[in-house]
Image: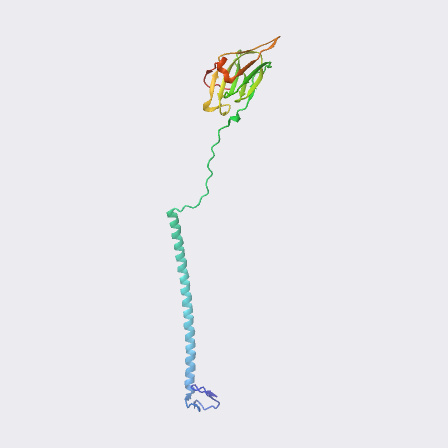
Length: 233
């Protein structure tokens, strides 16, 4: 059975190695068919080899492309980092909390109180009235021993009363506005005074003597004199 290569007529008769198509008259040879089949096989092999080489070459080209792309991207990133460093880009920085300057001690830190330094029993009244005078430390010194007997801390506008032992006492004063402590007193605004008179406290069968001092009227009957620093120890 043969098929005419020209008209595609199907011939069911075998006519040997060569035959003539009864329909279109074309002469066909088995030798030509074998040659054609061999060429087809060779062409298929050649096509397979060529396609394999082309695929391998394409993969190599694709791989090379990605390698160079990675190198190029790396160079761009490196150059960008260098540019950022050279131009000094200002990145946002959390603000540093400003140091707080301690507030000066308030006048309220100075409280009205007294400190009795003598061991003797106090029986005679001594009253100190501040009114509008500055904050004051009023010191009674024992004239006999020269020691500090009583320290009275009187805040502006306050008054205080204590009882002291009988005897003769001189006085000193420390005045100012803002109290800084036992060492600094009132700072640069501290004023020190030495008293110009003595206080005599007596006790007898008729009773005890007492004294009242109004700090805002010292010039009336007391005239203290400014002096150097007075130590509270």
